[in-house]
Each structure stands twice: as structure tokens, then as C-alpha cells.
Length: 74
View 1 (cartoon, one colour):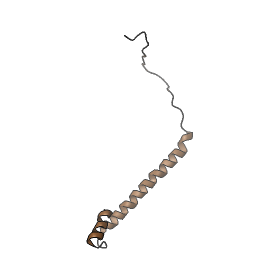
View 2: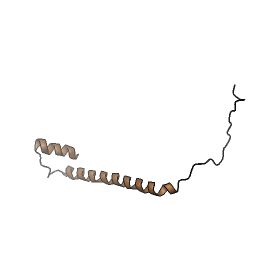
View 3: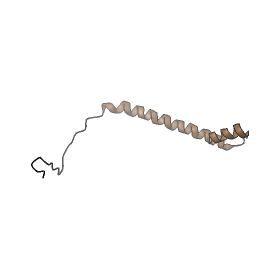
View 4: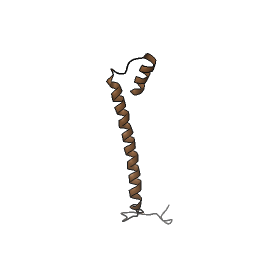
């Protein structure tokens, strides 16, 4: 949106003061930057807290598992 308005201003000389689309474009850019920064901060928090809590995976029980040995193969 803001790229379109910038092109309109530079090439056609249209005024931006009477367009509410400029304000919406700026708000969308700021909202996008906030979402990106929130995602980066949450990744940092998750990676800082969880490594101490991560345990190696283990198998508790096996249910109806049949393994083939060399004698059973045709």
C-alpha cells in the first residue's frame, strides 16, 4: 500500500495529505514489525527456558510389536 502511494507521489505528484490509505499503510507496517519482534522474542524465551527441561526420549511400552528374525524371512 505504501509502495503504491510512494509511486503515486514520486511519478504523478499526487498529494498524500488527503488519503487515509497512507495512515493504514503505516499502521500495517508497524503491526508487522511488532509481530516479527514478538516472534523473535518468544523464540529467545523458549530456547532459553526449555533446554534444561528437555529430557532424552525413551520408549515406555511396546504394544503388539512383532520383529522378523533371519529364520522367519522367506
